[in-house]
Length: 145
Image (cartoon, helix red, strand yellow):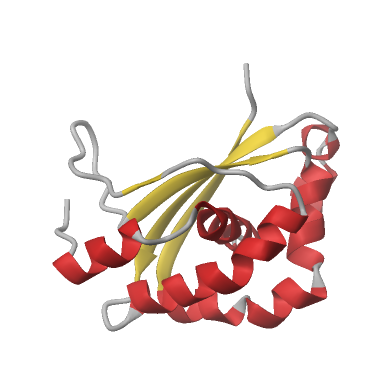
């Protein structure tokens, strides 16, 4: 695992729950959902699901820029029904390799709520902040069993 600087840890500890929700939504948008994936029956159900987000910040100022993004995106995530209760800084990969700077889950009431966020004109106007902060990301949709 790569180490996170003290400043980054302090910044991440101050990110709000709304900020994490908005991060997840932005990640999904930039994960490039294609028409085939969006047309899958499981993607258009009315059931809730979780979106796992893993982020890798850009070396110079990425964590700070992401904090700015979270402040701007949080209200949009909440407006569209996204909820989260915690975020995590990975400490150690015990099996395999994983060195993300930040991970979290966002619960969505349904897929339509998520897609409405990534199409919201207000959200689109601030989504560039995410791209300015993130070197890489991973977004995975999880359904409850």
